Amino acid sequence: MTKDQAEMLTALAIAARPHGARRWDAPGVMSALGKVAHLDLAEVIKAIGRAAGERDLETPAAIGNTAALCWTERRVERFEPEKTTPETRCGICGKSRALCATAPRFGGDDHSFEPDFKIRTGGAVDELRDIKAKAATTELEPAAEPQPTSNEEAS
Figure 1: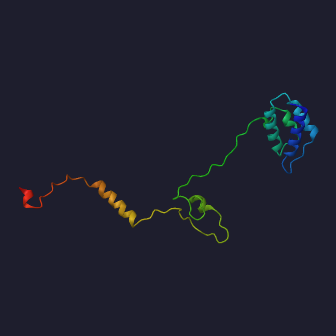
Figure 2 (figure 1 turned 60 degrees about the vertical axis):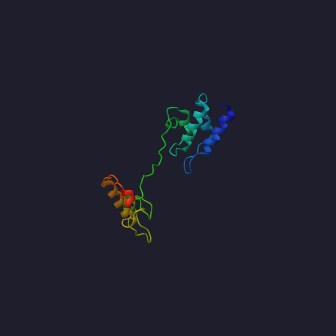
Figure 3 (figure 1 turned 30 degrees about the vertical axis):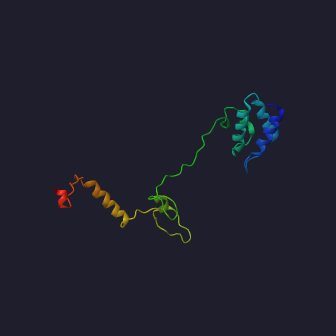
């Protein structure tokens, strides 16, 4: 790590501190960087980012200590959306049945769960269901021979 790189990283670490967290001074950050100057620059940059983002760190000393938490990769927790089907999702608020039932209601929102998709009964759906059921239960009969229509064909 060169002196110019260390100065840039120091400015970055100081600027990256969260709002309300204790401010770090430049000599303290430079001192911590001097202890890890022999390490890979990309790893040092990651550690600086993690350390600077920690509101509870009072000093930048963790940057110079490779055993500190800022030197270990942290697993990122990602939000996994709940998988719902149209029958289990509310058509009014879009939440699942359980969330819709327990969600607080504000203002004029006093709806109860209404499925996003309803299976309609009656009409064409029932007719189609009856046709399919009849076709499945009826056995195919052999075709009857055609009857002659006139006397000439009969002879």
